[in-house]
Image 1 (cartoon, rainbow, N blue to C red):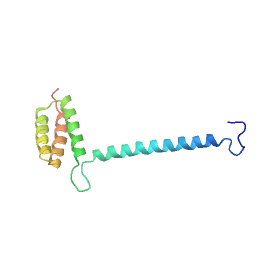
Image 2: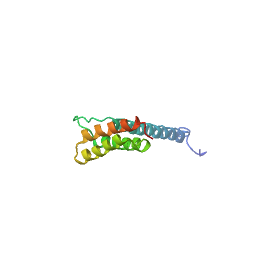
Image 3: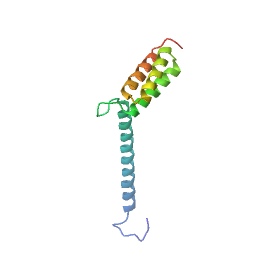
Image 4: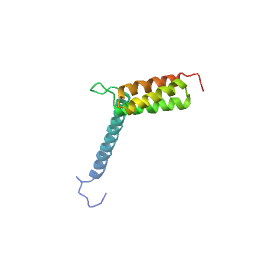
Length: 112
């Protein structure tokens, strides 16, 4: 601090910095919470209107693709192809169900 600073202003800079740091950490925790909430919402298949969101369908496609890469079960791969066709036809509910079924088939496959 400056020697010429008035006594009531002395230490004010430190308090302001503390407040600023607290606000930054609050914003960070809010951002983490928002990101986690959005991630959890993407995992849920139904939307408020009762349908399946594109995001949920794409995530299911990614999960099924990863499972098929680890354990390429022929039935699972066939289900993925059917799901792709349903997705192209914009039948998201059917595509989502097929992707989830394909993921389970591949995960539970005995083929390596």
